[in-house]
Image (cartoon, rainbow, N blue to C red):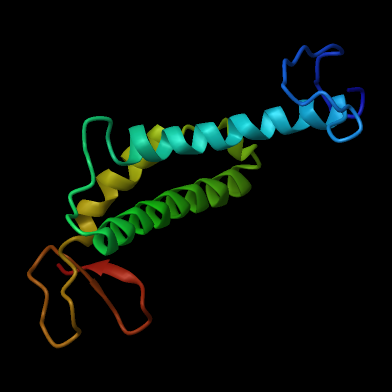
Length: 140
């Protein structure tokens, strides 16, 4: 495993795949790392984004699918913000905390919940609104 930076020289992996030509040891070791990337993403979705004790509320298969896609989009949005923050800070995105990022987004969401659905309504004083350039500002 010399071609992977920071990798230990010896890995032990037990598998039921016995044909070493179909599954070379180096390939299996590299894929094992990728498996844990997926497990981590599932944990982020199930535990940190949705909440450990919260179940999907929808009652029909179509609405369950819609709710699940909404969670995936929220996960993608948080990960996208984390990536942008890491690039700006010249940091590895894997070093940022997903849970901390979710909490930051949740704190900021309260500001944007008061945005009116259309430009026709004048926002209440002290609430955020969009100006003609599309940026969000707070009305004095």
